[in-house]
Length: 126
Image 1: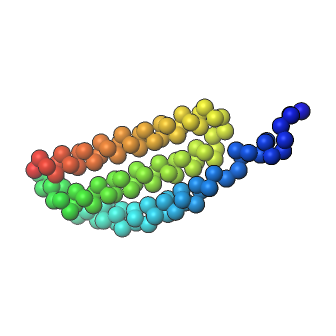
Image 2 (image 1 turned 90 degrees about the horizontal axis):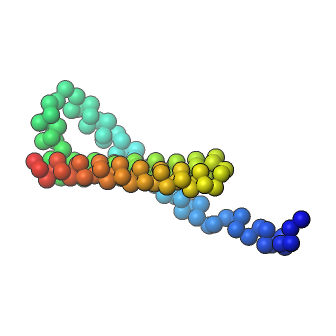
Image 3 (image 1 turned 60 degrees about the horizontal axis):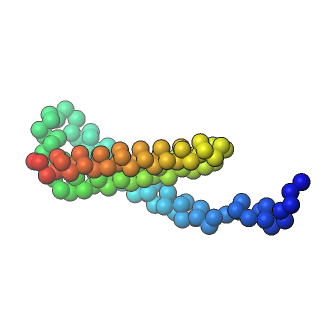
């Protein structure tokens, strides 16, 4: 038996009013990824058989580097948002949930930054 009132037991269990914003961001990143993915796949197919120096020259274009950075950032952010939903919905132990969210967000940040830095290093080295 609990001494808390029904209102006290229900507080903190309801909506945090953040689901709509999360949903919209996930939809916007997915819409942005459609043309970016098509561009990336077409670029990889067009560069098939090219040597290292041809790809380095292609990546040294500011337009190509910028679009590739947009693709990486949108992809990692969209993936992190999706994994957050999966973890929040299916991991029920609070400690595992927090650890999972920290791991997903940390990996997304580190791998995204590594990709952006790699692109920028090729862009400014060439």
